[in-house]
Image (cartoon, rainbow, N blue to C red; front, side, top):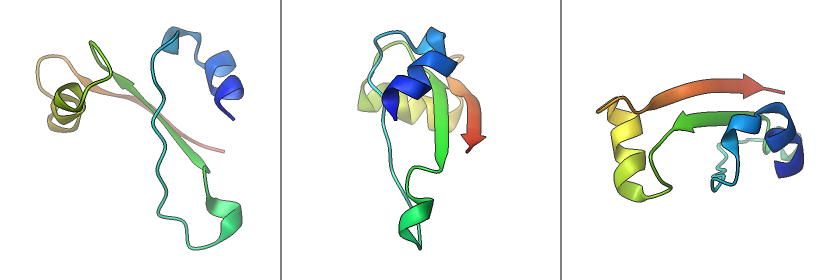
Length: 64
């Protein structure tokens, strides 16, 4: 799955990819990919993304 994400979003580079799921059925697991603009893969940066602080943001959310 991550290879496809990196192919589709080359700007992700070597950044860590985070996945989670609120799926109710097995086929729904990993059905959404979220790309976030972060300075580094840390919890502090993730908090800034979620709050929209200092230019951090969700760049794209894709449903496959």
